[in-house]
Length: 230
Image (cartoon, rainbow, N blue to C red; front, side, top):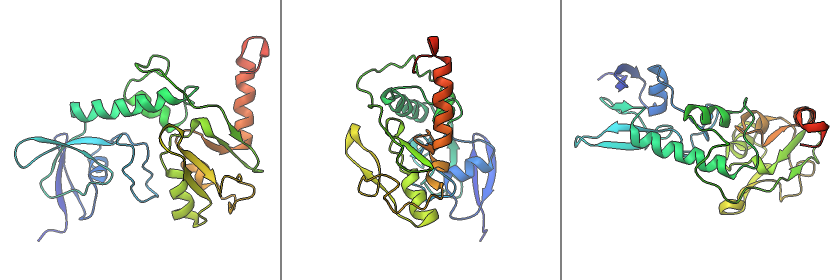
């Protein structure tokens, strides 16, 4: 019995070890799939559904699956550009963007994913309630910009799995869901050890270094008319 699985991704045949996910097979084949809640360093979560792909079913149909959590199987045929999968994933990203009071910074992962789906933050189909701007700058090194949090869970899992500190918690429901440090007493008074794992994994800059937040604020004010606050 072979110790490798044969998978075909967008017409490219690739062999991967047993236990690999469809996402790993796609990457091995040179056909990357956009992700948002996924980080190679963390246990796959499968929450955002941005990594959807099509997989040919045994009955001849096409199944849409989350590639980051679905195990690859021998003989699997994957289509990373399957129309239905792309349409749903794009809608998810567009809804995420519609909740933000400002477009994501160009360097962020969220902005890169938006570009992958040709989404312009200023030309979305949906408009409605947006997150209120609220910053927690009580920590000496880190800032939490609540309005940029998309509840992907990466920061919480990085704090738990990489550092083992368990300083961050998912709070709230629905539109008002977000992240809090400790029992919402702020980073300074929580169990945070200032390792920066949360800021490093955040795809939106919702958690960032204070120095970077200050720099971004200065640049925004400089670009505003007459130097007015942005």
